[in-house]
Each structure stands twice: as structure tokens, then as C-alpha cells.
Image (cartoon, rainbow, N blue to C red; front, side, top):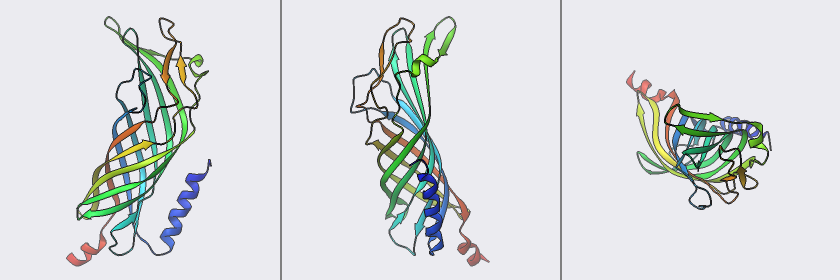
Length: 231
């Protein structure tokens, strides 16, 4: 499992070798996330971001294109504490999207598929707001004793893309929802390192985050056919 992303790259090159017409893009996404299925913790609206590389495989002008991508994702999860405090859990992951693009109109594409995540790093901290000294944050090794992240996560992807060309380069704006089908921790995570010693439930094993990423993609190559026509 740990080398599945390397196998994916080999698969991309295999498709390239069998005569596909490809688009290569860099992508960036940023947006809010929330646990709609779980209210056992005192949450606020969280945030997520991603940066990656995707390939669009197509033959001629078919309406459906295979659109796999490899990306890095940052997921921030917060829980409100007493005394204007926040518990912060950051998970950094490497992911694989296996989705398809369906052309609805000339400049509108439907995106549907699944995603896989492998959590590489987690960081935990507590922060408090002080009117006299400003915000301050701290963390220690005790906070990780009861923390057990779900290393492999998966879910569904759905969204819309709005492609256009700028100086013969493919550009896409859009949005995509990531709905987790797995938990993000193996057990309920409690933290008792608060300033008042309260044992707070920070993450629930039942929680399934819903993420909405507003995306931007830019093509790495330019359309040579139009240039030839102009010449």
C-alpha cells in the first residue's frame, strides 16, 4: 500500500504509451470543511488545501475523459475550548484521485470519482486568545499519547470544472467536494493538556469530513495545432 502512488505514475506513463492524447496540468485547491454527520465535539468551520498534478486522457472528442491526479493535501481540524481556546490537529497527506470528466457543455465539465489518502504527518497544538499578550500556542509529546490517525482514508469526489484557453494554454476554474467514507482517527481523541486540565474530546471516530475545494488548474503545455493554423 505504501507504494501505490508510484504504481499510479507507472500506470499514467503506460496510458501515454498506448496513444492517448493527454493534457498535463498543475492544480491548486483551497476551501472549507466541516463534520456534518457528527456533533459530539464543539467544532468550527475548518479548512483544507491541496496542490497536485493531473493528467486528462482522451481520444478524439469523446464526452468522457479519465482524469487521475496525484496531490498533497493539508487538512486542519479545530475544536473549541474554554477560555477562548482552540485545539488544532493538522494532517498532511499524499493522495490519489481516480475520477472522470464528463462534458456537459463546451465550457462546463462534471467531475465524479473517488480519492485515496495516506496520512504522512500529524501536528497537534493548543491555542488561546489573550487580550493582553495576543494569541499563544503550545504543544508537547503528551498530546500524541492517545492520538491514533487513520493512516489510509478514502471517499467520493464530485464537482464542476469550467475550462477555457488563454494564449493557447488550458485553464480551469471550478469546485470539488471531497466526502470522506472513512474516519480520520482510529479512536476518539481526547486532550487533557488544556490550561484548566479539562479532558476535551477533539476528534470523533464517527466524524466524516466534508471538504469543498475551490480549484484552479493550469496546463503545462500549449495547443500547437492552433499555432500551426495561424502560421
